[in-house]
Each structure stands twice: as C-alpha cells, then as structure tokens.
Length: 172
Ligand code: SLL
Image 1 (cartoon, rainbow, N blue to C red):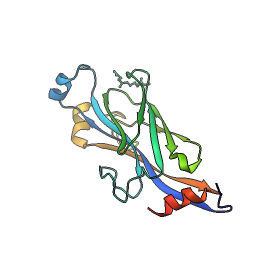
Image 2: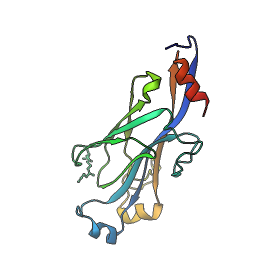
Image 3: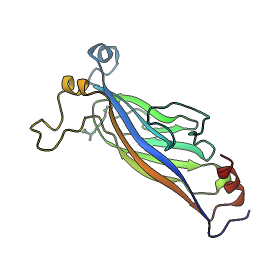
Image 4: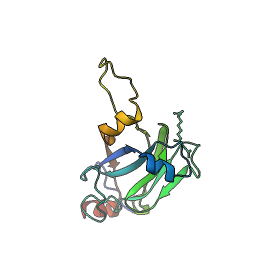
C-alpha cells in the first residue's frame, strides 16, 4: 500500500441538529409525555442543504465514511447509536439539551483513524441578548418561532493518503 507523501485532501462536512417543539397531540401519543421536542442530529456533506435527505447524490459521504456513532445522553435507552449507511443521522424526542459525542469511522481502504467531535444538541431558539425576552422562551412562543437549526462546518483532512484511497476520494 502506497502513501502519496506530501499530499493533503479534504472533504467538507456539516454536523449538527434540527429541533421542533412537539404539539400537544404528538406529546400525548408518546410513551414519555415529558418529552417536549423532536430532534435530528446528523453528519452530512457540506455540499448538501441541512434539511436534505438525498442519498447517493453528490452529497453522499458514504464513499469515505463507513460509520457514524452518536453517543447520546445516558437518559436515553441504548445511548450509543451506530449508523452504517446514509443518512447518517439519529432522530429522537426529549426534553433537554446535552452534548452529543460524534465518532466518524472511515472506510477500511482509507487506513485512517476515526475522528471524534462533539455537538451541543440545541432545542431552544436563540434570543438576542438584552432583548428583554427570557433566555429559554416558553414552548408556545418557541413553537411559533419554528424549527431550531444548529450546524457546524468542518473539513476532514487526510494527510499522505493511500493511493487507493485517494482514487476513491477523487472518483466522487
Ligand atoms: C439537562 N444535562 O439537565 C441535561 C440533560 C437529558 C436529556 C438532558 C430524555 C431522555 C429520555 C432527554 O431529553 N434527556 O427520557 O429518554 O438539561
């Protein structure tokens, strides 16, 4: 296996979450009626829109990502969620914000170590500082403000990649 020395190649990704307030009806239908929000945490190509669910398109990262592991708060059943195909995301309901550990594992041909990052699950809308509004708006007000989005841009950099992996990357 030959490494291409001195070469760096990167792939732009976004990771983060969207969240919406559950309606009263939706809350009553849950086994946990204390849950107030439905949210989705995801890792996607930065070439995709945050809401897109397109699989196999130009924004599909599965040609170099083998698995994304989302480690949720311990209050969730089976908090370690492995996702082995796109869309690399987990949807849940809940009541609180917390830190989600995100581990991205690459295809075996890459010979690359997994990378670890964190995302603070955001449920509550941002309010301008000093606006006189409470920092966490009441649920009925939050519902009117629409879905909350919290996304971060990052670049996964592969240094001295294997020639075979470079071929995979550049073929997409
Ligand atoms: C907080 N430190 O106190 C955080 C913890 C935990 C969130 C938030 C429900 C889990 C479940 C849930 O939303 N946990 O019932 O399955 O705000």
